[in-house]
Image (cartoon, rainbow, N blue to C red; front, side, top):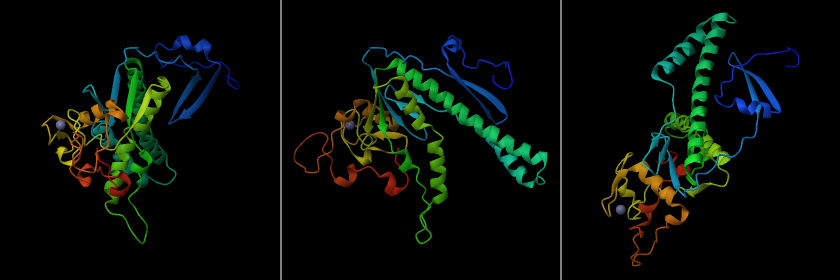
Length: 283
Ligand SMILES: [Zn+2]
C-alpha cells in the first residue's frame, strides 16, 4: 500500500478469492471505526437458466418482495433489542458533557448500529438479486416511483399537510426496504432481462379472472374477487399480475355493454389511489 507498506486484510467475500489476481484497482475506506478494502472487478454476467421462466415481483412495506410463485421475501431489519440500544445511546449522547469521550462514544454506537442495518439490507439485496438472476429468464417488477411515494407530507407554512409524522414513518419504512437497490442489482446481474410493469391495477385486478374492482381488496392482506370468488393473499395476487406483464393487464373500459370480463363497473371503482395525491400509497 503506498505510504504504509504491506497490509493484511480479511477476505470477507467468501469464495471470491479467485477474482483477486484479476483486480486492477482497489479502494481503501474508513467507515464507522472500520477499515475496508474493495477490489474493482467486472464479473461475468450471471447466466440465465434458459428455462423461459418468468417471475413477477410486488414490493411492499409488510412484505418486501412478494413473488408470483407464492414466496414472500423480507429484507432484514434491526431487532427490537438493537433498536432499543440505538434509542438508549441517542438519549445519553446529548446529556454527556461537551467534548467528552463519553459523548463521542455514544454517537459512534448509534452510527455503528445504523450502519449495521444498512449492511444487512445490502447483503440481502445482493443475495436476492443473484437468486433472481440465476433462476429466471425474465424478472418483472411493478413500476414504482419511489421518489414521489416518499415525498414529505409537510406542505407549506400557509397550507400545512396532515398526518406529517405518520407519512414520515411510512417514508422511512419504504426507504428501509431497499426496493430501488433490489431492482437495480437484479438488472445489473441480468442485463436486459428485467422489465417494469406499470403499477396501476396490479393490486386491484383478480389474477384468476381479470376483473378489476376496488372492493375485491378486502384488507391490506386479503384479496377476494367479487366476480369469481378467487381468494388470495393481496400481495401475491398483485405479483401474479405483474408476472403477466403489461399486455396481461388490459385497461378497464369505461363504457358498459362491451361485455368483456375486464370491464369495470365504474370509473371510481377501478381507479387506484394515486400516491402523489393521497399521500399514502396503496399496496
Ligand atoms: Zn376473479
